[in-house]
Amino acid sequence: MRRSLLQVAVLATGFALMAAVPASAGTVLISADEAKLPPPKGAIAVATRGITRGPKIAYVGAADETKSPMRLQLKFESFGGAKIDTDSLKVTYIKSPSVDLTPRLKPFVKPDGIDMPDAELPAGDHVIRVDVKDSEGRTASTSFTLKVAP
Image (tube, rainbow, N blue to C red; front, side, top):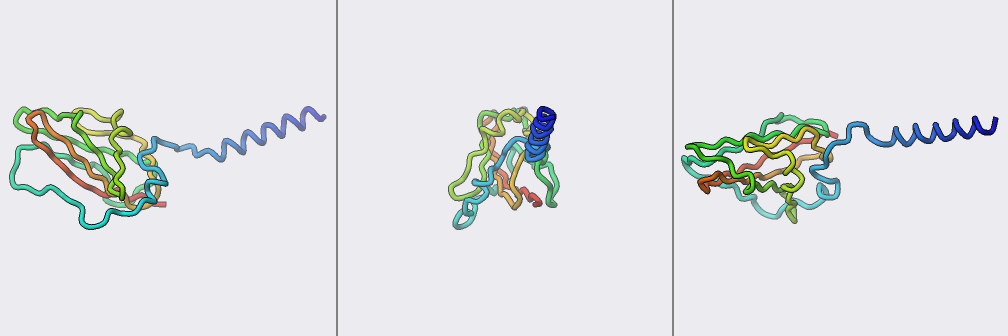
């Protein structure tokens, strides 16, 4: 009798621990501590130029709020026979101080973009800046906001 009570207690503890771990945990893109950092002071610099043959960066995603984990997808496009230089990629979380997200995204980078299927982010608005060059040395930069629902 004692043994079966012990077995039941062990099983109940195991189930309680399993329930405490989120089943949909993804790859952490932005931690809760990073999200608590203050916003930068002043304006955020954005590259604006006329017509260029440099690469394009496009965020592929909903403009509305989404739940975490989310799919983070960017598309790169190059022109005039140039190739995207993935080694030049820099992804920054705009906070004070800024947070370099590039190492976290490297496993998901391809010459035509980034595809991270399970990005974990805390709830809130997160401003991200992406910079990349092509094989001709031409640069591209874009910023976008990821809106994550609680």
